[in-house]
Image (cartoon, rainbow, N blue to C red; front, top):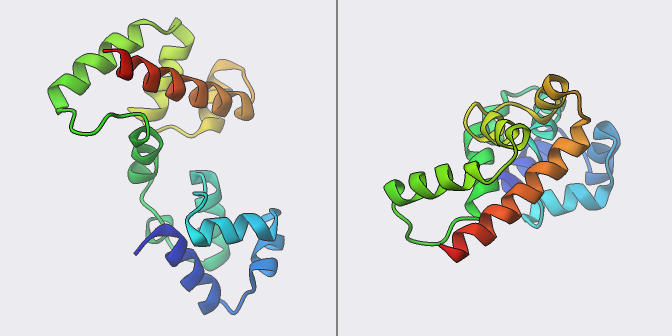
Length: 146
């Protein structure tokens, strides 16, 4: 079952409308709709909040490791082997600044939350997310060139 289908099932089991769920999470009803249809994916902080609202374990909605791997999956060319991917990722990491490299590794290797990374480096959570988005775009371009 896809994440959106799970959210829909949990919402209906809790007898909540999309609007009511949105109010509990302080998001728009449109965003809840996009999660449920698969047009958008909730980040892990939101998954934690959803789990709290539905009184379930977050892994019932989506496993954290899968969520993080999906973030990177869009960057990877199809059919790349694990040895080649490892070599390319190591080479890519060398192109990043020390801080950006650390942020990337903390997110995708240690699976730390953006808030934790931000606190560690004295930057805001939104900026951590922006950095990660830019690094994923850079990784995508890098892998197309090699």
